[in-house]
Length: 213
Image 1 (cartoon, rainbow, N blue to C red):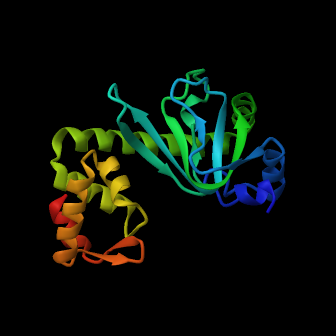
Image 2 (cartoon, one colour):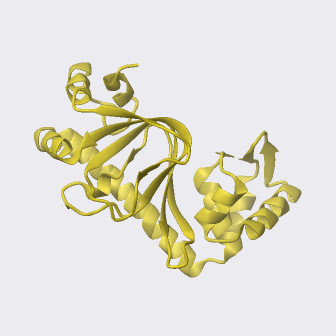
Image 3 (cartoon, rainbow, N blue to C red):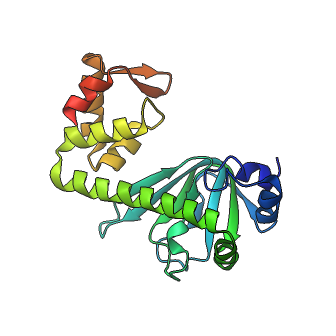
């Protein structure tokens, strides 16, 4: 599949014509991703914006004790590292590949020139940035005001109805220990709120889960 065909599936570019997408696709280059690879580290110069074509990536920060605090999981079709556009700032988090795949890259200078010419793309990008800001504010509020049970519930609701996260990933997103997340998940299974679906979890009682959030 050519780059412009991939772009059409990304919400940021989905409404553009094939000719426009081909023009943008010519600015991109691709990189293959291996599990465990660090795409960029927190503090590295913010040189490019990324679009995940396949695979999976986690974005995280480390505290002074070296503990990971996961900010976001990047799924195919997502844009990421867009916060460095225009600002000349370093990357604010580390991007680690957790499932091998492929990423499309566009250098910041090329992206900025594109946004100056294409107002509709700039507007879509603003919507993406506002959504990410809302998620960040929500997580800060959860960590400050909610207990462990409510934080795990919020993660489940955010990634449901079928949750393709490990218990460790759920724990990292909720800011709790793996043991705490496992205990809460098992209790929800017992209550008929969740059920195992292969290696995933499925929410089968949204209303009851919301009561705990």
